[in-house]
Image (cartoon, rainbow, N blue to C red; front, side):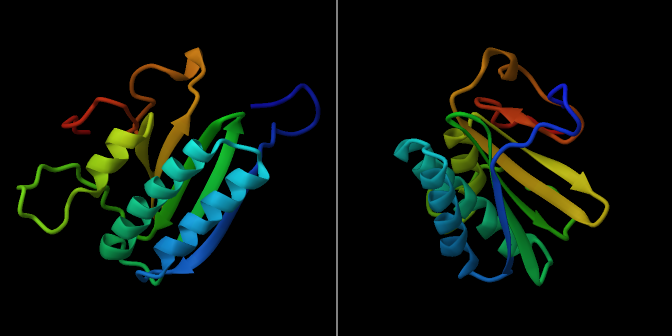
Length: 160
């Protein structure tokens, strides 16, 4: 996307590389909250983004086969937040049903329920799992957005 001038349109973005360990989740949440505050985003968007990144980081730490994860937070437009985590595993996350007594396995259900859309981008060295929340412009609403596996809210149980 270009702005009619030299170069692509830029929007606020922050990212960091964290060790692939449990302590990465609180650091990622802090990154999201600080970015949202700096960009003047609502507290609701910031808190939802913090929960989304926490779940995605936790999945990457548990299943990502990486020594480090790359965490990013972006504001593609006002009141719109995109969070993402990159790890070295080429295996995408699986949205599965778990029993009421299970001690884990609900993270992607939370991501699916709290985000407007989420998905996985396969990369040559692994994958990026992302989620978006906030105001949705009419042109952004709609179905899947390509082979990366994007899911709009309400698509629980879809498979790629």
